[in-house]
Image (cartoon, rainbow, N blue to C red):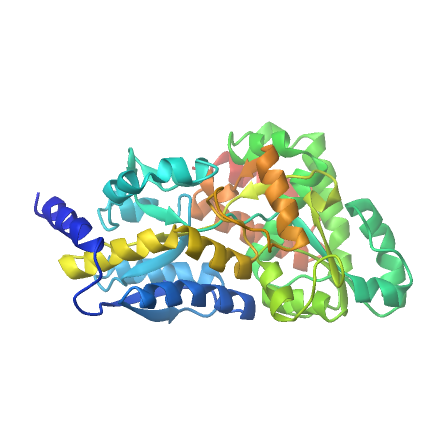
Length: 409
C-alpha cells in the first residue's frame, strides 16, 4: 500500500517541472560513435526538463553490461534508470518486485494507442502490468555493403545473398575481406538468425525460436542454413576485429565488402558522413526475404522509495516516448521509432525501407521475446565456437543446437 501511495504521489508530481534538479543515473551500453550521438538526445531532453542525466555508460556489449546492471539492482545499489532489451531480460527482476510498475503512467498517456507494433509494449508487460518503455525498433535483418569495396573489386554491388557469396572471389582478389565479423558471440549468433530467416523463411525460424521445435532444427531447411553458415565462415578470414562497430568500420572504409548487422550500424555510417544509396547499400532480409524483426531497446526503472526520484523516473519515461524525442533519438540511432505518428521525412533511404516494411506488416518478433537469457547465451556460445573453429562440421553444430532448443525455457 505504501509503494502504491508513493507511486501515485510521484505520478502527480511528474506532470510539473521539478522544484529542484534531480540527479538520475542512467546505465546503458551505447558507447560507439553513433550510439553516443543518439543517447545524447535522451540526455538533452531530460536535462531540458529541469533534471540532471548522470550518464552511466558501460563499455562493451549488452552481454557485458547486463550482468553488471542486474548485479547492482539485486545488490541494493540500483541506478535511476537502465537500458535493457524489451523481452525476457528483466523477467526475474520484475518477479522479485525490483522494477517500477509504469502501468498508471502508460494508461494516462495512452501508450497502447501509441506504440506500434503493440507487441513491443506486450514485451514490457508481465501479468497485465507494464514495466518498461520501449524506445525504438531495432531489426537484425540487414546486410550492409560498401560501394568503395565493390568499385575496387570491379564488380556490381550485390542485390541478394547469393550474389554476395558469388562476389567473394573478386573481393579477395582485390585484398578485401568479403564479410566483416567481430569476435563477440552475439554477433555470430545474430548473423545466423538473419541467415535462417532469409534462407529457411520466417515460419521455419518461428517454429524453432517460438515453438522450440527440435524436429525443425534437425530438418532439411535448417540443415541448409547450417551448411550455408559454415561456408560463410571462410568469408570473414582476415577481419581480425573484436567489436561490432569495428567490423562496421571495415565496411565504411572499404576494407570489407559487407557486414550482417542490425540497423544500429546506420549510426556509424552517419557519424562517418556516409550516405545510404551513395556510399553504401542496405539489403533487408539479405535481399531474399524483405522482413524486419521488431526487437529493440527499452528503459526500466528500478524501484525507489524516494518519491522525488520516482517522480523524476516517470518524467523520463514520459519524455522517452514523446514525439520530439522519438524523432531526435531514432534519426541518429538508425532505428525505427515506436510511434507511427511522427514526421520522419528526413530519414535516409535505409530507414525509409524499414518504415515501408513495417507499414506493410512484414515483421517478426525478436528472439529475445521468446528465448530466455540463459538459452540465448548458450546459443551464442555455440555459434561463436562454430564460427571460429572450422574443424567443427555443420552437422555437429546442428545436433548441439537442437539439444539446446530441446532444453530451452
